[in-house]
Image 1 (cartoon, one colour):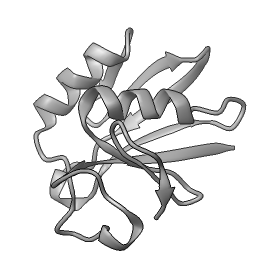
Image 2 (cartoon, rainbow, N blue to C red):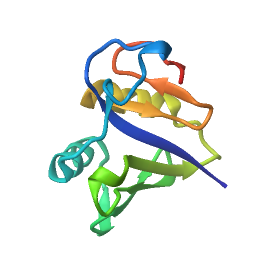
Image 3 (tube, rainbow, N blue to C red):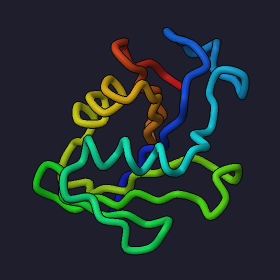
Image 4 (cartoon, rainbow, N blue to C red):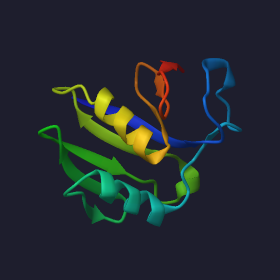
Length: 117
């Protein structure tokens, strides 16, 4: 079983449920910047393919997936259900200024409270 987080760039902060739209939640488009940012935050991250990266986080394997064309969708992180990654993803969002959406669905925003998406 796996759990997925999707990552985006906020147009502004803070956001609330009623402000979520394509104008405020933007797709991360710069693949080099995405990979460089993740490499700084995720020690040991290796890209097996140009679009699939893997690392160990909180003692378990995670995978990062970029679409072949960044216009086709967001960066995704797939992880095990054996560990709750929410606090770790929140720290990632805080450090990189990204938004993350999980499967509940909740929106995690940098330096702010999560809220229903």
